[in-house]
Image (cartoon, rainbow, N blue to C red; front, top):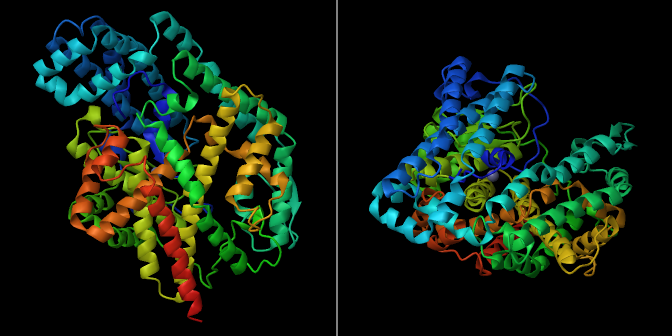
Length: 628
Ligand SMILES: [Zn+2]
């Protein structure tokens, strides 16, 4: 979390958790006490939380008294920012406890109420400090720089925040206009809510009967499960019914997503950005060129994705055209399910991450030894997986739903990548510079996934097991890179339609999406044949309502590919650059931090490294297949 006091509550809540994109574990197992987190490191009891909450609420109320004092002197500015920062830090600690306690058991009412109190405290904090950025802007760069020179504490902790605030000057409006925009904040949240209501309440989930006689109601969760079934006719049935249902609502989904695009365009226009993309890349100060390089390079890499699809077709024994419904079943079936307990996963993670060296590994081991993780599924527990590192003075906490499969092992390595990143950052940076960007965060975690996958391939006990891990490595690149870039390209395309003054609709969006699916999956090259009904998929993706979001995963994966490649080839110096990137936290913008680590995200190199990784995996599979 940076010292961005103007951030909205929803955004703060989202940023607090670096959640994995993986699907929730299915079969709940009994919680193992060894792998339940100990929240007494945050507060001894819920009563202690309540007492601290009252204290910080009182302190938040008093922050208004600093209004108008920042420009008096360097010391006066430091005093105000220090007080504000303290309330921010403690509010986050309160919110971490409230959130974790609520996620342990979603039916626990006092815990859910505590979470609401935590959110309300964030809102109160934001309201009581809403004057801060305008005041800094009115003081101006010259005076701020003079203050930074005059007060060492001020510059050590607040220089990045102050410069970042001043950077927003050309895009900050007068007090009256800012007030009007803030007052419309709730309206801007509505398209996301409407999409959720439509997809999860109003849209009737279709029912299908599979070849074995099972009847399945195709909710989103059931779709995720049944799209993987081995029987191809069943998969087709699932796809036809599921996407057919979405197609019936394309007009409403289309009008709603159009509203979201309009809001982004409106925001960009009133804040004097040339377009919505440039507004979206502003907060991370990411050059817009990175987005365009990403899309261009993913397109250049499509022949390698197509090579993978040809292999998939062959492995699944498909004689006619490969379809969109053939992407999810595993290519290399195992006779026995590969199983990893949490203890196994920890042991494997330590071995697999050896290339990161002692400093990293000692933090990982320290984390495993502490009770920081709520690892196994449980009744009423929150689904999914995340690392929450917002309690700056304490340590990270992790929620998993470990169900002992390879995906669970991968998720554990991923989330602990976030945790060690947090530890390194917190050791090296003051609170005010501890909030790292999603771009560097996901590089740290996806890098772990890559090293893990390489390790599993290398240590596989049988050829078939090796093939399985190689196949998983391919799927990771398809889903975290190519699929996300396809989404990113779609998002950019619908924005550019509006910027060019062309009308948007559900039909138009479906047509744009269909063209992209056909291009990515190689229909013109005869690799696949895409059923147009399945082009309703865009209606199903909630991320289009989070701004330009998905490209961060794809970009981070490319960064991770170049970094891990560099570490494996060049050893210590490359590893040190990587550790320095993690330690830098939020002390600089991600583009600059990558550059210091030897990576220019605006050049083709990182993306090509990732595509080369995919080629390498495909070569390995070919080599193994020949050994028959
Ligand atoms: Zn992550």
